[in-house]
Image (tube, rainbow, N blue to C red; front, side, top):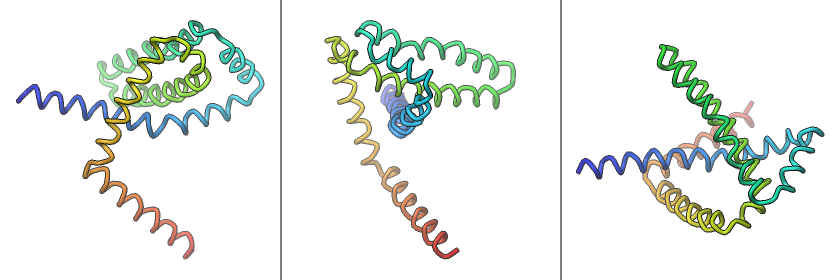
Length: 163
């Protein structure tokens, strides 16, 4: 019984992370693509796209390594009683890291898929993630949330047209 409860908690936490990334992945990636039109960043992106598979893998994993000290600093801030600042740092790191990872994946995906093990695990990850997303979208809470969102959007549209 305890193991089942822990598993449900773990699945719920993973679902939240996946939904955040599902929601944020494309918009954040597009935002970075827009910023990358600046000449120095466009030059860097062209170099990233041209990388061989192992180089692409190194570049793709780089944000994870770079964000580790930031996350540790956030935990340290929380530990010394500055929970708000620590939480803000974690949220900022998550948003920035997701944006960077999404953009880097878009740039490196063709090269990464040349690595047989990566392509195999990516396929498994995608299938697993889609199953989690389908479960969440079939849930009562998700359906109610969509109804509420639709009503809010409709009211905002009526309010804008009335004003």
